[in-house]
Amino acid sequence: MSPAWWRWVASRDSLTRRLIEAGAPRRFRVRLLDQRLGRPRRDEALALGMAPGRLAWRREVALCLDDRPWVMARSVAPLHGLRGQRLAGLGERSLGHWLFRQPGLERGPIEVSADPAPFHDAPGPWGRRSVLRHGRFAVLVQEFFLDDMADDLALPAR
Ligand SMILES: C=C(O[C@@H]1C=C(C(=O)O)C=C[C@H]1O)C(=O)O
Image (tube, rainbow, N blue to C red):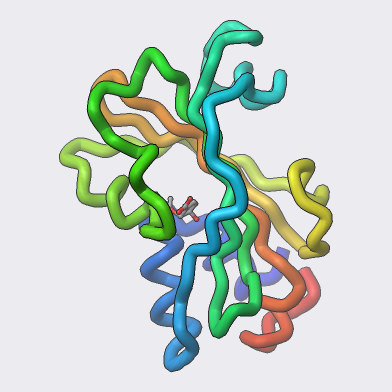
C-alpha cells in the first residue's frame, strides 16, 4: 500500500473530518442510501460478536464531495446495544460527527481489504472496517474508498 493511502486507511480519528479538510473547498455531504433494522451479513455478525439472525441497525451512505461519492460506507449496530442513541434520526448528518463526541469511545483494530464493497458496486482501491464501542454500544463501520476519490486527490492507484 502506498504511504498516501496508508494515511487514509490507517487513520483512527474521524474520516468525516479528514474528508472535509482534504476535499475543501468542495462541499461535503452524506447521502443516505438505506437505513433500517435488519439482519447483518454473517461476516458482520461475527465481527460484532453477535449471534447471526439477531436484529441490528444498518445504515448505508455515500460520503460525497461536490456530489461525487468518494467513500461508500455501511455501518451495523446490534440492537441490544442501542439505548436512546436515536440513530434513526441521524438522517444525512454524519455518524462520525456523533460517534467522535462520545466520551470514552474505543476503536478496535482496523482491518483492510482490497476487495470491492460487498454492498455496492462502485470500484475503488481499498476498503476497511473496525468496531467502535462506548459502554454497551458497538458499531461496525465499513468504509470503501472509491476511484473518484483517488482521481480527485491525485492519489496513487493503490
Ligand atoms: C465513523 C465515521 O462516520 C462516517 C459517516 C458515516 C455515516 O454517516 O453513516 C459512516 C461511516 C463513516 O465514514 C467517521 O466520520 O469517521
